[in-house]
Length: 86
Length: 86
Image (cartoon, rainbow over all chains, first blue to last red):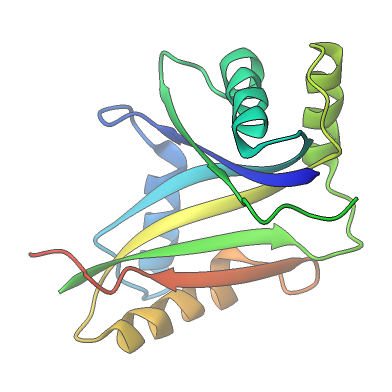
């Protein structure tokens, strides 16, 4: 089964979110008021696995080795358990 | 009330997702197999509004005027109805 796995990589609290700040400033210049803006990078990985646990393990490995920098990033993983027919 | 509003901006189907392809290739080089990878940009806007509808309207305006390019992007908006105390 192929599981769509959503991986969200965001900056840890306390790390300056320059993109978020810039978006907020640009919105303000357009007259759109926000209290704050946080930027998050999301990847949807389609992973072939037997179980949702197997797909989660692969996604964790992907985060650990490529997608997230543990110094500045937090990440969360969400598996769509319904999967997709091959 | 301040509502956290999650705005997800992704490429329309048929538009080349270069970042997704590159991530997939990099994962492959690390020995992590995926069927496909889709990249999505997410912004969490904290919007001061009286109702969730009001917050949604502001987020739509933000997408229309800044965050999404209608030629290549689709976007979705999700309001956390519980909001946050000021």
